[in-house]
Length: 137
Image (cartoon, rainbow, N blue to C red):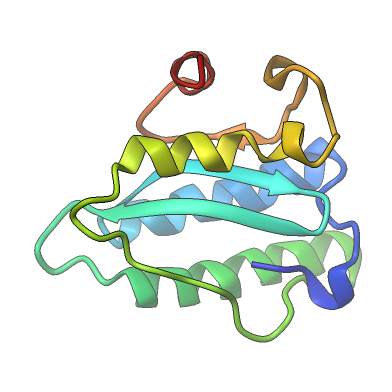
């Protein structure tokens, strides 16, 4: 999900913490787990998984964007998200942990840090950050 006009919206912990809290709160209310998330300066990568047969990932995402955008506007008086976002559903042959690894490795690939332990904007409701980083080795 890209920020509005690709603004550098996720560069401080106050903002990221607030938007991440909305992500986790919304996911929980829709019976969805956030397997991995990575807040890059101008976009968010998130891997989510339904925990129940009736989990609705699209409604969860829509509600998160609304709630996260509202929280962001309250902090900054600015719009957070651009219209639309890229999503895809994992196929049976795609390993969830492989996609989670790809997501959390983004800051290194983007040159934002040399060691993921230095990057503060990674998260998961399933794994510790240490487990995700260890899976990259």
